Amino acid sequence: METVELNAHPRFKCGKAAARQLRRAGRVPGVFYGPKSAASMIEVDAKEFAQKVSTVEGSHLIRLRSAAAELAERVVLIKDAQYHPVTGAALHADFYEVDLTQLLRVRVPLHFTGKAIGVALGGILQPIQRDVEVECLPTDIPEFIEVDVTPLNIHDTVHVSQLTVQGGVRVCFDTDSAVVAVLPPTVEEVRVAEAAGAEAAAAEGTPAAGVKTES
Image 1 (cartoon, one colour):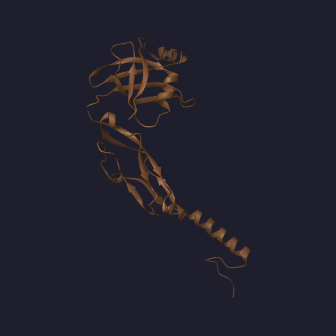
Image 2 (tube, rainbow, N blue to C red):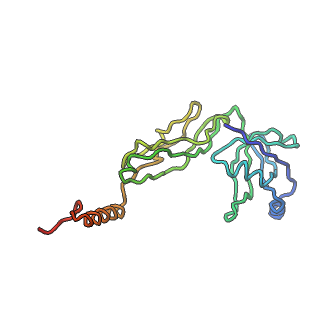
Image 3 (cartoon, helix red, strand yellow):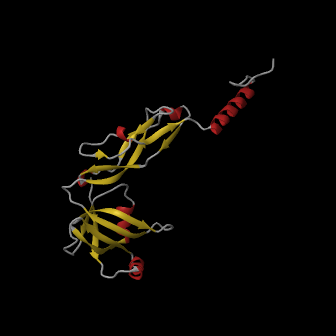
């Protein structure tokens, strides 16, 4: 997978007031930590973070660029990030250092492709999960997992165990839960379809299916 490069700098002031001051200056406060690294406070440029991280789907490796030896060339994942509920601006981010030789678990988005047979027959495609947890080496993290829904008929379901992934990637699950299904049309949709059929039949002067005529 592609590794994103991000400039990072140590920060030396903590607290809400210091964090607000950083954000006003166009910076995002964060924390750098890992299984072999003590937690330390860092900051990154808000615009660069938005362009390279916030808009990227799924989990991506980030290589930190810094003049500080304790940060330079460290490879991290975004473990958690907070965003403003209105503006969407990044408020804080946790940068977790990873060992490129060790397996880890991350969430990977699902992409549903194709048009299900059941949808063409009036069914409703219902995604149940938008992502799944996988285990792999950091360099093998997929950007997404593709799920072809084309063969699904009404009442058909795809389960976690049926997902196809590349070698070296394992989908993790305790129960074989559904990720997507094709549901039958709702009662209201059936009524609308029947009404439309009755109107069309009336316009042609013939009875619609299921509509009785007086003898």
